[in-house]
Length: 183
Length: 86
Image (tube, rainbow over all chains, first blue to last red; front, side, top):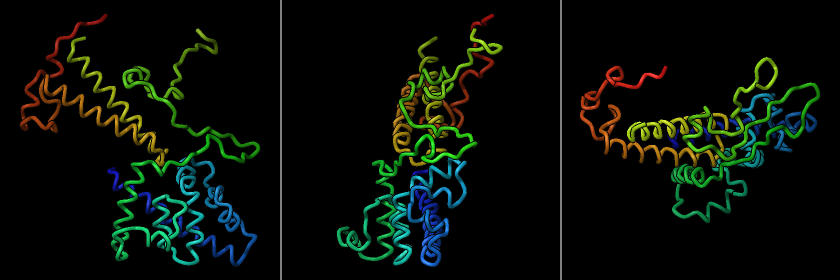
């Protein structure tokens, strides 16, 4: 997958997210006590909206969007498309109106779309998409087992990793036991 | 291990590293640190591949500096004599 395809993929994901959020936001207006509405307001726990707590992939994607999501919830009331596209850039503090006037070369709507995908590429390279995903959820449930989510740390050198079968020291678990005891 | 084998092993190591980072990014799609590392690793692979090809000839049919058939003129795996380790 090229960088561009990846970016498109992320934007699609986030657009979907924004749509879901706008639904949540509407719920918030009509029925303040619904579960979805509460989550939409407190963004960090978005996972539970989709019941995807046990799926690390879902978590990472959703976690990655927690800030932009807040925006798209706000945006859902005024201008959903704009906000969701900005969400894709992961520039949390961007306000559509003020920023448009700041950005050079921005004349038409289609032009803006191009600009934003270019900026999206740029932000990916300058690492603004990085979002911490904690090893374990902030709230854990009794009687459920959790596997800590792998964090990016130092890696072995290529040669060492090739020998060990993994470049991640965290995952380097050579088998040293025999019949329950260390050899 | 000859220089050629050593270089080949180094290339394989970096290829393995890029694959490891690739599958890491499958589950951590927003991790830029890993993405950066992958970028560096790919550059390194290109560099080493170039070194190898300059010295020992094309590595595969996708190589820049080969004709369609040149790359298979080298010894086939069963034609390479290796010490038997028993």
